[in-house]
Structures are given as C-alpha cells and as structure tokens.
Length: 88
Image (cartoon, rainbow, N blue to C red; front, top):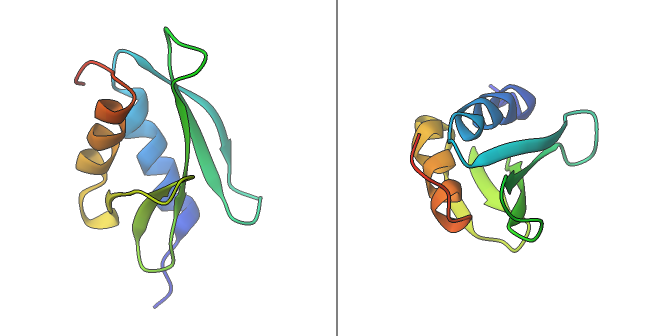
C-alpha cells in the first residue's frame, strides 16, 4: 500500500500551525515533491520547508529527519523546537 504523502503533509501542517509561534506559509501538495513551508511568526529568517518521504519520514530542506507519520505531532514539535517556537 502506497503512503498518501499529501495527506501526511496536511496533517503535519495542521500540527505545526497549532504552535503559537509558527505560521504555515504554504502547502504545495501538487508540486514534486509536495512540501509545507513553516516559519516562526516573529522572524523572517527562521523558516523551513518540509517534505514527506515515501517511507513516511518528515524531512527538512537540509536533510534533517524530524520524525515519521506514525507520530506527526512529535515531528511538528521537533520543527517548532528547531524554529525556536513555543510549545502547542
């Protein structure tokens, strides 16, 4: 069974958006690869683009593995930590 990476990224965006200091800039599900861009609301430079691998891992643009689709909330929390955001 193939993983629905678009659905996984939608869930990741939702969990990331629950963090007080994070804002979802864009959710590009039709691009190749699909991605979500998230930034710290208080900084123009604290931002990251996240993709979802076919194996179900959330990966930053610089190759850091945030976590898996088995625990999307924790993966989004790890991104919040990296972007110096407050907890959800």
